[in-house]
Amino acid sequence: MQITITINGEQYADLTKGMSVSGLLAHLGLHEKKIAVERNREIVPKSGYKNIALHDGDVLEIITFIGGG
Image 1 (cartoon, rainbow, N blue to C red):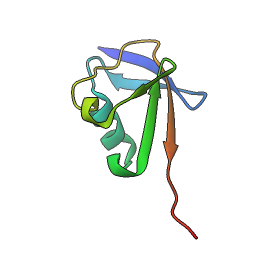
Image 2: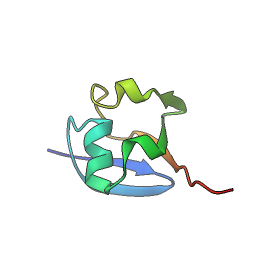
Image 3: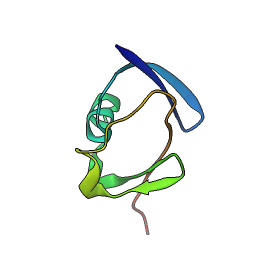
């Protein structure tokens, strides 16, 4: 079964029900150590990425850290 979530204001409808935050990041090709994730206005701790399942209608903000100096 497929779910639809919103990531950074854009809808994604090709995701599998029960996919974890970690699975989503792998699906999107993002490295877990270089990002921060907010789900439904709450920060997701990196320790929870593998255990927190996404649900239909979730709203995520994903921020990528860029080094510089």
